[in-house]
Structures are given as C-alpha cells and as structure tokens.
Length: 112
Image (cartoon, rainbow, N blue to C red; front, side):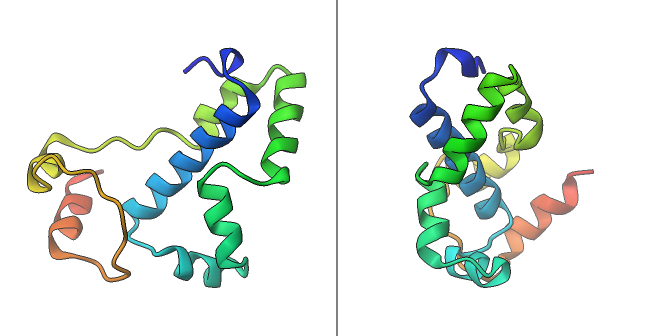
C-alpha cells in the first residue's frame, strides 16, 4: 500500500481497520480489549474507527521521517484463508463473541 498518496485521516482509518481485524481474528471483544489494556471502551472504539490524536501524531512523525511504509511491518494486513472464508460462507466477520469457536480454533491450528 502506498501510504504517501493517502491523507492522514485515510491512514488513521487503515490502521484502525487493521487493528480491528487483528482483534477479531483473536476473537476478543472491544470491551475485553479495553479491560486488558486498561484503556476505556471509547478509546478502543475511536482507535478502530481512525480517531485519536496519538495516531495522528504517529502518522505525522512517520511521514516526516519518510517511514510510512513501516506501517505494513507494524500492523500487517490480516488475510483470511480460503478455507476459513469458505467456512464463513463468504461473510466478513463483524463481531467477536468473546468465546473461542471450534471452527476458528481449527483454522488457527492449521497456520504455522
């Protein structure tokens, strides 16, 4: 992804989407993540939706240091395996239940 062609807001949204994808992949709710990190639930929500000055500050610094491409190393895009996609019948996951589902545990075991 070419982050230099995106606005700061678009980069914030991309980071938020990647964080949300990682959280969902680990089957953790926003409330559980907030509790584990001692952040507020609203802070987690803002982060996932691309809001918050701390991310803006990070982007501004990375842009100035010409290191925006390091975001791909920082939070790589989460891909869904074809097998997992078939199990989900083409639906994209929207929420975490907070409990590990058997089908997702099997998928995690298949990965190295």
